[in-house]
Amino acid sequence: MALPIPNLLFVAPNHYSGGYVSPEALVQVKAEGITHVIDMLPDNEHGGFDEAGMAADLGLFYAHLPVQGGQDLNKGNAEALDRLLAEVGDTPVLVHCMSGNRVGALFALRAHWLQGLSQEEALEVGRRYGLTRMEPLVRQLLGM
Image (cartoon, one colour):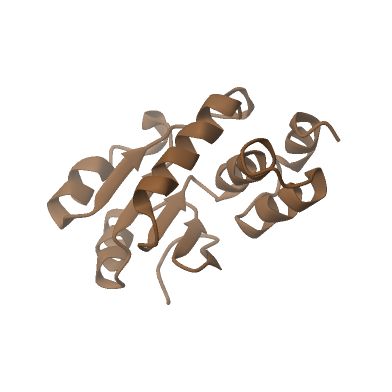
């Protein structure tokens, strides 16, 4: 799949993680059969693009779970991500932020706090979903 999304990763069956989604990329997301989008960008990072409105026009399930930075890496947001993924089920979903880093961070915390994975296993999940620069903070939050 050649979508114009920075740091796009195919992580698990029907799970895609990546960075900023432009209007053109969102059209291609739909064309590739991805039916759900979970957007972690805060409103101020969309650059004027109404991703929610365009997703609705395209018939995509869209959820907004803004993660501004480290202060939003908390159990409440991990639980919100978990609920959204449960709603998505086995259908193709793209979870994105600006680079994929915040996506990976929240997936790591979800893996440990809610799925019971060890700290190291959770960190590996995070890396698979795009965790990079936030790894030191995630390690701290995981109690490492």
